[in-house]
Image (cartoon, rainbow, N blue to C red):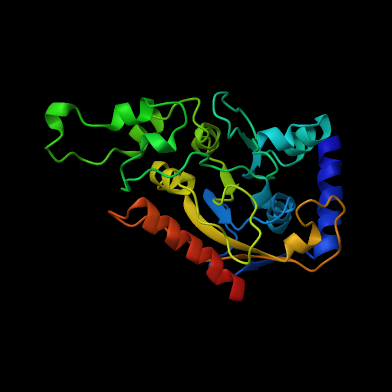
Amino acid sequence: MLSKLMSLFLLGLVRFLTGSQARWYGCPPKAEQRIYFANHQSHADLVMIWAALPQELRSITRPIAAKDYWTKTPFRHWITSAVFNAVYVDRQSGTPAAAPAAAPGAETAALDPAPPAPADGPTALNAADIPQSGSMVETLAPAPHEAAAESAPPTPEALRAALSPDDPLAPLVQALSSGDSIVIFPEGTRGHGDEPQPFKSGLYKLALMFPQAVLVPAWIHNVQRVMPKGEVVPVPILCSVTFGAPIQVEPGEERRPFLDRARRAVIALREV
């Protein structure tokens, strides 16, 4: 009951401060499994996306939250778990996260804390992408005597099964495997410029593991002025969230071209 009251209070507060306008430009609001991915410039991004979704979508959509930030105090922990039903992501790999997770200073967590791997490929998940764990790479890598032979791409099921429990993506995979939709911020941390930073590889990996999930880009407009980085008191400013046309990984598309295309899909919504 308390979480329901807090949800209604926050929804009213966000709509009062920002107007919380949702603009469905490229797709209608629909109760299907989706991965929403958006630009990230403010602590308020998580709340803004949550408030922009209609009730029937809010109930099945879980935002990603940086564990070390959103569990820092009992109140933050309660509001992200009880009200937003967030998925905690631990960027410091080593401890699996079971619910909403977070990253230092970021409201929503980086999905790929490690530097990008040097090689790209729609079916190759490289060791540089998986902190302190080579299990996935070992599982997916061909045996020495098979190195010269062409092999079929790993199936989504094989990719999910090969994921280490300590991988930062594990809580997201668990949420998607349960049928939930999620909201992610592929930059990994809040940006300062007018355009998003280069996307990290988490979105690509999830798209390969869950090809049935609809990938919906979103542009959050003006929210950085409501609560700029370093500020704690929100300022009333009209804001909006524009949802664009879904994209997907094309057959044979490599990691970096896909991530660049996904980033361009988000940026394009800025002018809509």
